[in-house]
Length: 163
Image 1 (cartoon, rainbow, N blue to C red):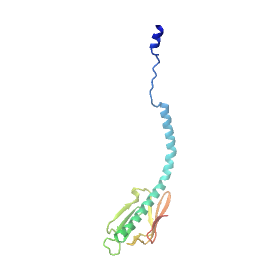
Image 2: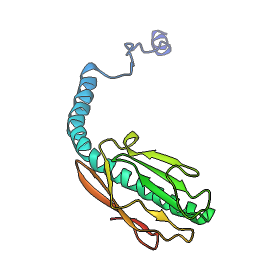
Image 3: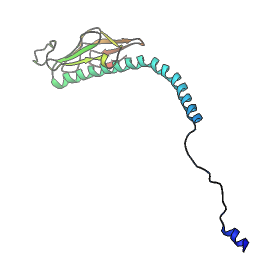
């Protein structure tokens, strides 16, 4: 009978706590690795930033020049892009259809590249005029910042491309 009572009793094992989580050493190791990776990555990113701004500004200007050409064809009016200074330009159309595009005539769209692309400046050879058939007077717009320069070319056929 003593043997039966031993079998009926459950084996008593010590209670093991099963807590989950991270130790302080693990957390400090992860923070140290993140700090080292940040120290390597941030200067590399900051050195690439001016080039990314220059590329973005050149794409913006090229896109706006293509939009001005499409506007001239769509409205069957001349459309002119006025480069006011090193940061701003305006797109105007010949609203009165007299054959000349006057400053501020028609639907005026103003752009400032400094709001999105700080440090980029514009220079141009001439203010391009897009004809109702899509051809233009031709010009080259040069965008410059600390990483270099890019040219946006408008051909006499009206084609806009980044060089």
